[in-house]
Length: 99
Image (cartoon, rainbow, N blue to C red; front, side):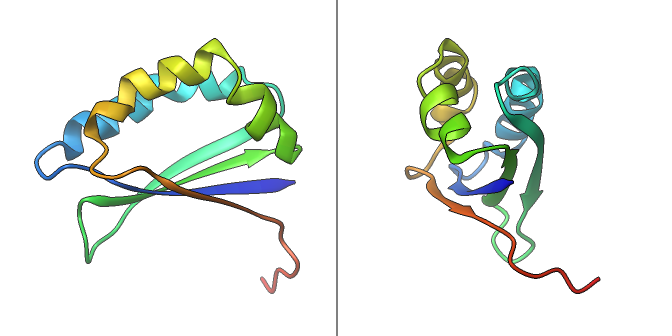
């Protein structure tokens, strides 16, 4: 499993609209090839900063299949207007789980 972690900073005052856009986009991820889950978390220290966690079966399911789809374009329409800066995205693989 690949975990996509996207750090997203939104424009001040657009937090509610961004969160609503992510909720509206959930079905896009649910039907995406290889996507097995997603979650959005908000920073306490910096309320305009979010982290989006998306679980993918393979890296290519995200970087090729989803990013090359019409659903990715729809995702960007729903949330892109609220980005303060381009999201920082990385992919990780679990190497240890203690509990």
